[in-house]
Image (tube, rainbow, N blue to C red; front, side, top):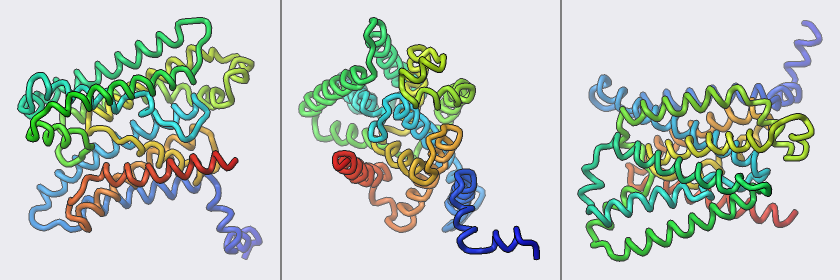
Length: 333
């Protein structure tokens, strides 16, 4: 037997082989596909012609959300050079909740429950993208622009939106408050197919723009001074990245609702598993991990807990714990 073959069959050589980022990315792809197949086929009682397409719609929605949240989080962490920050810190989730609260407060709970899903999706995405675009233009219009100032202003606006929502919620009747509370949690059980098509188109457009800038994203991750020294128009690229992030987060939030800590979980898992910061590797790994977490989590909820709780609640709990751990870890350093 050739020496090369003997070397590859040794346990230490196999372990070293699996440490390669490309191999780990392939393993994640296999696990993601297996998770989808298990979710689509296991536990079907009755007609497969109904059950499989019904579950496939859920998987479609989860893939869209995994892509949008995963990619937007990695790009935002690249801009801020901070792996404990997510786009939700800019106030997107709070703005989404404020929109829902305003509708219930002004028009009543029936208006929120019976509103046309496509119109509601367009309005929510338009408002969130417009808010973020105005915020970016305001912060980056002057000579002294700072991403940290942008994050700080985003936190302030997020607090303002939450305070306004809380004030109006206190004046709602119990029935209206229950409808609003249900709408504030992300859910994959009843996603409109036309909304998924609109979301897919928006995500595809963002992806086509982003794919042409993967190497530029790597340069941006080196920092502003290094990026400028390498000939990158830092201000223009960062502004474009923020717009892409705003579109992805807005589309995902309007589609299923806010999932605050989901991006934090999958992005940090991707960095830890790959040991690389190259966007060509990290972005697909983050999306695959997102698919595994969402599809696997939904499978466990449906077959173990019988949908006694929402998947977003579990994600927020796990993400909150991870956020605290990362804060303590950075503080120790």
